Image (cartoon, rainbow, N blue to C red; front, top):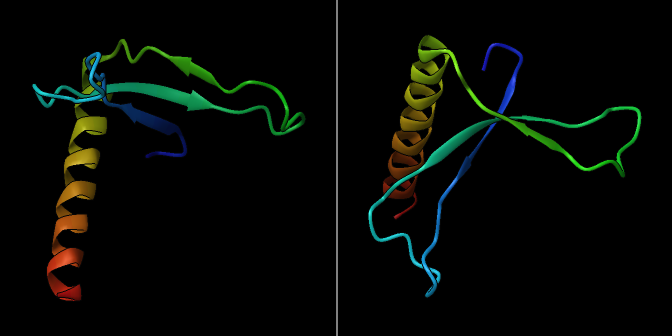
Length: 72
């Protein structure tokens, strides 16, 4: 989104389930000069940016569900 990468993480309980549907969003970046370097996650502190990320994620999920319906 807007030339930045983000990642969505699902927190899981001790049984490997996400019962409450909670999703955590972070900025995601990799070092293009060193592919072996660990990627970095950063907090999204700006409310407007966070809202855009959640909207993009919702749209992505909607498109996935639509694609699944067409494949059937």
